[in-house]
Length: 266
Image (cartoon, rainbow, N blue to C red; front, side):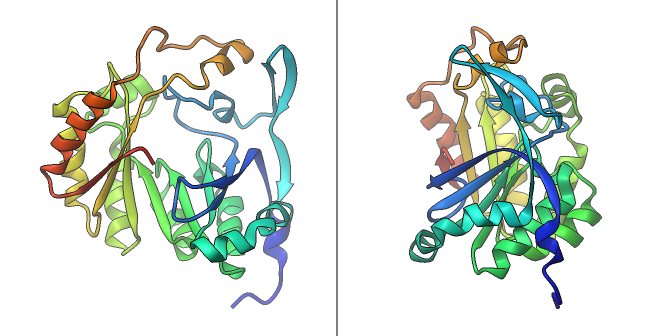
């Protein structure tokens, strides 16, 4: 039982709050983007999320500060403004990043605060954290886990992302075994995993997870590439084109052979 509101004073670091989203969970949502990530995905469309540090980024010729420290209470003041939309649509709060699990206590208390006010909660995550912490601090306050599974081959996963995939796959099974509702999400990236063979392998793994019924295929896009220039960084997938709508449909049909509901986009 919660006896006080101390959780509202928990501090964390964010870089954006996106309002009126109809993605990343049911209904109309507010998405809070947390700073910091253990992965370095070559295609990341939010490179400003990767470092926990507060940074400078040039956007449209102007230098901007990326990242700010806030309390749970301060975030909830913003989230609360759209409570009527959540009630009408079944929406609520989604945490994204970066990787929210790197700020475990902040993420936990944000989800708790949203639940205390009756909002649906979702987490967009790689699951790359200690499972005991996920189980204790995240799952009790979570309605929907949107889990990225990017590749089944650990060596290729590490080559393109900087970390192996064993912890991700192990946690996916533990999270679903706990009874948590989970949707598998796959960023479809040419040169990395955009072949029928690689997609079906991920889909078969998703099908093997307890209670998983859906997989989302998220087509690669080039939005955010200018951010690399603004941060003084090189974009490592320069020259790679997004998959066509027709090809995404082909991959979706391949994934559907597992019996999963397959959606293109989130």
